[in-house]
Length: 407
Length: 168
Image (cartoon, rainbow over all chains, first blue to last red; front, side, top):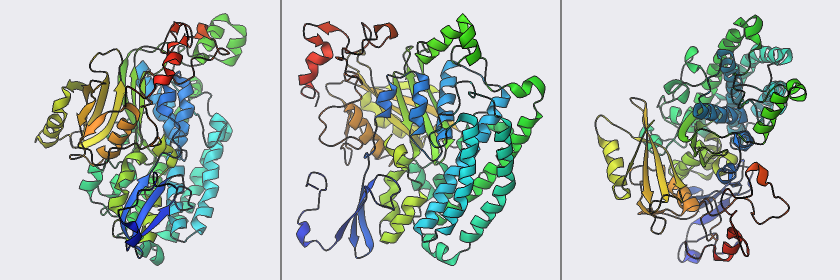
């Protein structure tokens, strides 16, 4: 490391504090990011975060890509819940293009989005456990993340970077296996989540490690641009699903759990409670989907031939379908000019897409509002004066995803 | 969403007013980002603020424009702590100089980078490639940046050695 990269304070030879380099590759960062900690003994005097190690210039790349080719880029933001990003992106496109989706599509989307939220919170919470020395919970719940991934697989064919959905709906209808697996998940997961909570919630060691650690007041959290579970843990009931409902979220009954102190324990509890709420939403959506009978049960996309790929069968037999297929794949369809901001409640907060279109085939400018990137700035304030081991817990309980931070 | 623009000198006044006013209460900075419009002369660079009134659930979009030769805009870090990194990111990509920012340096790109990559004069692909002439699909030919031909190849190619000299 040269001096160019790490700037030590003046006269650092005689300094009484220790500099500790936490990252960029460190088991506790769970991603590629660097924290330069100044330690007085084990107490943190100051921190400096360096990010950008996996910056892939998505915003620049997106300026040369037609809409469908941007969906795989959004996969790689928060890769713990890529369907949420994909849906957010498609909803943004639909907002710009003025596409209205049928109710059944909305409900199917809600199912997928809430499954993604569960898998995201599941990882985050169990990693908090791992970082505080409880590995069992992590391995235990991993089975059910696997089940969620299998559901994705039935719907779109892939697991982690899903590229799920299309503008106006899904690429195919949910098959029976998907519904069976979903039913299995709904049957078995509550018991597992209950057990997971039993492992942690009143665990003396876990409580000692997390209560009062990395606390932030509601005021400061809002000033730092916190959103999602981290903001709600501080006591602000802001949830994009409720304040600006998208994809028919207004049809569902659910609560927004909030914490009081905004510390790691509250963040953990809020995430856990949100998984229960997500389960409630999935159950309601599942019931609503099953109410569609006959031809209605076959609806899985809106009727938008300009943006939705025609059936493969038609492509091979009908000239018109072939032309549209070609035009969509090559991204030859111009968009209306204008600018939209659309946001969804992502795994760790408000995931926003700011889209400026000049009427061409690609976005003129696309900006991702990545919640992680914005709230990671608060890390210094959250950890100053606490112990080194607390910094590790704070990092994992904030749910920092390097892919999202660096875009 | 309500969108409006203001002279860049007034951006802090506007933000302060929106923050403090008893009825407006725009106290949540959702997003701050830059944009580059090479065709808008003297106001090539834009800074876009997305503000949210969480009490009444109202969002607004607020823009200021700056001259690319003197892209100085006052920082909003005094009002919103969250603006810190978002402004650094905007500086990193567009070279907007946030006056008064406590730590204005690159955040996602390497410190050694000597240009601002999201500006429109930097094409994503190497436009000088000859093995990839797909004029039919809007990617080559006569449309877009770096496509106009000169004696020494495309304009972008002839400008390559100038990169970073007149903009930093």
